[in-house]
Image (cartoon, rainbow, N blue to C red; front, side, top):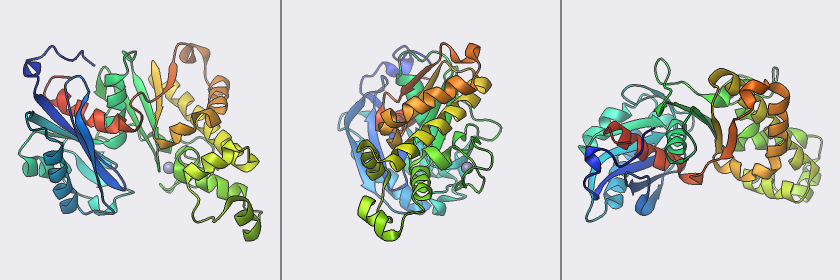
Length: 329
Ligand SMILES: [Zn+2]
């Protein structure tokens, strides 16, 4: 991580990059300056299960919309929820956007925009955003994004840890309970199976399995219509089943974090994504599990915090990676 503003490309204050965040239900984009500030507004376009051509068209339109009248766009950073092969940003597999499998995203987006393009896994981009903009984060940073699934990223010395072919830090699939619940990846006991939106809902369905349909509807409403947000409000009202599900998520997260403390020796662990909004409901069990399962020399001195960029970590981080690609962030 380097201080912004010391490099050649910062000379022109109108120089900007565009950050693009491709999500499961839509695409967001904004112009971002070298200090990480959004210039103008964040634009959003809904899309459901797009194919590569549709994503390309959407990115093209969003980049045009996000380009201010007076700015010069130097580069574009794109975060994609997928197992990406690096270098080159090739979609190996996207569990939530299946039609993108095999897409040569990096080269095709660059050709469509006629601009330098950096493509990153969405959680890697979010990790980079938190490392870039979180002022205290000089050391290794571990990011856990609790969304529909659970994404992860590790930033060391200002660079994303890519691994051999780009797929390092798939932290959602760290095993936290041997013989635990089934995960969407096909394995069992992954932290994602407990601490993601989908995992929380599955835990809740297991916890309420003994209730008849009538009892369930009477207490919680329609089972099919239950969302993580609704589960959060049910827990806030003190319902013991919902409270236990968030507590279990906290314990699972704490155990996953212990594995990361012992592997990476990070200075900071950041929890982001929509489910991080339920922080008060899972934090006590998360901290207790960290105390219980980690060694003090690796635990003491670590900061565990929520994402400073909240819902925009991935968008700002993708823009930060575009700046980094220009040698400027
Ligand atoms: Zn898994």
